[in-house]
Image: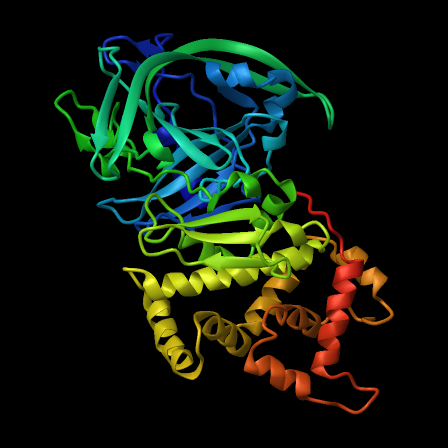
Length: 493
């Protein structure tokens, strides 16, 4: 990608047009252009829902664009360096083979607790606890789309607006059957230059002030605003790279339609009870770093998921239960509730195991009930049929399938997340028992928790080994005791 970009980047730099940065006749904002300097040592790669591949790479530039509403909520001197600027290479249609349209993403945190690093926030993964503004620009600084996000929920979208009217409007969006309210207004953009003066100090200077008109839309009922088919078309002088994907107008300019992008992907819906608990959100975010868990989570997300999922942290009627997943019908969101009564006195790895266990329940329900099953869903349905015939009661069916087929998967995920928690301290504490690091059998023992009513568990419990060998059941009790009393109850980003 680096070589591809370096060979083509000059064609994206606009020609000098004097100081006229805002054209009143067209409403088009022409921001001063800054050379983009990607940090090629770090990147994220992912796919949009329509199959287009995206590479997201951080920029090392010192220039930061701050809309006036962002400036009002941020202390620029204090938080200027916390604004993340990335370049997105979005796979785009082209008559000359694969082409990647470069776009610029800027993440503005709302407050200090929303400051994230490159690994924690990117376009395909907005953390559940993040609040702020996300703006997308073209490579030569033409506004594309913006999102207002609060606690992991997209509340507003901002679109480029070249209309002459300042009237507000409300209309029904037939695709989501919710009222969409839109307002057109002008905001100020101030360009700041950040100069580092040591590891923990920086100097921020204010540059030029520019303006833009935007239309901000809010959707009622918290459904999440749609983009409404935004396909900006911009004129580029000369042939340049535009000739690969644009059309030549009467004036000889290249008209390039910026390929549409879906809204930023925000994580699973969280109830306030879950969202406001920093430890719960921290554990969920760390679980999402695991590829298997992330694949399950993504199936409940997007602009309009087939089956929705919401997480709670509340007390349950049965205090002995650590969590539960509820299938509430096809037209209602599924609920996962982590029992708050047992949340504070258990180690973080135990709580993560509960979230994982309940997520598997949710994924089982989704695979059985989705209207759009993929190949894995169909394979699961075929396998699950045998458990329906063997066991009575949905819970028994789920748990027996977990015990028979998912213990290794759960063990691998728990081992992975433990590395992101208190692994080193815990390893030192139990070094006499596990002198050569923590074995997979330890995490497999933890995965048995909640499956004690299954046939597989009873078989495991009844297997005996002569001393000094430990049976699987003895290892299970040992692992439970160690993680309960020696495991950390903290989680830090």
